[in-house]
Length: 411
Image 1 (cartoon, one colour):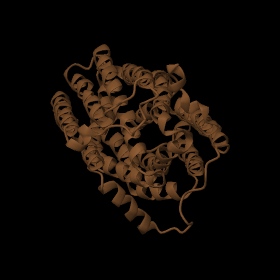
Image 2 (cartoon, one colour):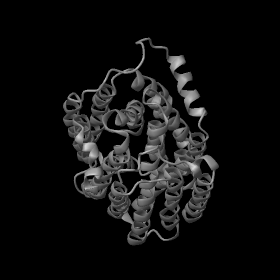
Image 3 (spheres, helix red, strand yellow):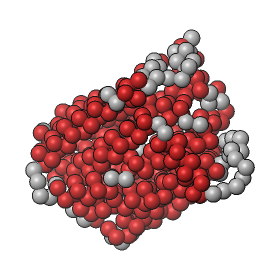
Image 4 (cartoon, rainbow, N blue to C red):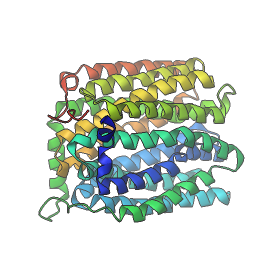
């Protein structure tokens, strides 16, 4: 029966435990981005302040992500994730406490956002590297789609709840919920049993970084996609992460609650696509992924032309579906074509390249939105985003990338 293949990853006890822990943190963390954005705007209704907080998070992530990849390949990945959750509890908990006591300031939030960004730099490579250890090659796409399913499911309701909480009792309560999630996930991850990390036990930071770079640079499809996302992520974080909330707070056609519905619609699009990907394999994961991600240009343009809730939400729904095609396709391509013992390091180079321009994006868009017509900024951004995504899809190694032998046989 196809349904058995669709949930084959749950046959592994380790994956079930990891899936539960990840689901808990995604449920409680689904409100965090909106809560943080509007917490900053509550302290200072200035898009530059929000861009500074996002920049601090991203810069810390960039600085530490290569080290995170090395650590995740050398130490038990579940343990790395647990340790980072403890650090997250401390940083986000402090922000929540300052909000409750009305003593939060932008410089303090900037510093705590940097701590959270540094922690995330270790979590992300560990998350990417741990999944092939938890399931079989045949179930990789299903495992990634199942995780995306939960993420998108909670994204639908989380931003709406966050919007309601922010407008009623304040942003700090959403952060408290996230802390509860981390506290619950830590003991669950402690029950995951994985083989010891590969290697002879000797640790050399520069040798490990050089090995990861060689694995990264030797794959033209990997380099092409990362270079594309170097620019696309800067556009995304600046336009959607800075300009979007600013328009929502200052344009009655959208509003804070309306922005929550828009973000939720994007999650609904991801949700629908994950259901499809549980049943149907991506035989050309990168080709379809880059064409799918180009659809983000639609809500970006609509946000500039006519930021009405229904129109932007429908466009975000379409973009969410396309984003999930890329997300699952990219994860599968990485996990099938890169050795597991080097996967976290290669993923860290992917993340470094993809994130390195994002701080510039947040700062530039925070500056642009105070000096230029938002419609011109967003429409131009949408056009550039689409051109880069579609052009990358036609890079020969990206266009031809298929699946590993036997990986799609089950479906």
